[in-house]
Length: 160
Image (cartoon, rainbow, N blue to C red):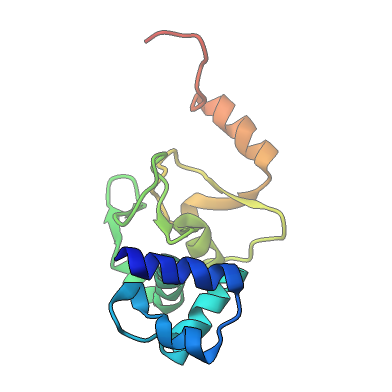
């Protein structure tokens, strides 16, 4: 961006009133191109915090457009354990995710009713398993007790 372009933008931001004369001076990053009405409207919405970022829009549209077929294309059954293993994105803890939603929770809701305020717990100890027969609804307290009983918790202060 040229110094003249920066100065024009700074002047416009200070005044916040776009007179016809100033609109002539304003251009996109000092290139001589004029803002369209749509881009001005988008900038106003961004300033108000209404407009979502492009990355957020893509993630939201991806979640809306994922069909059951697409979701199940990322599942590979393990015949030895009867687990359905999620082969798509997993977080650092090993749980599968589609956008911001956990896959095992979403698949559980496809097959069974999830009561309000309940978590989805695994009967098996495989974090990327999404087999609805291996999942059940429970409280966070039940999840913690189950974790402790099965020895899946982090033992602080112990060296391996």
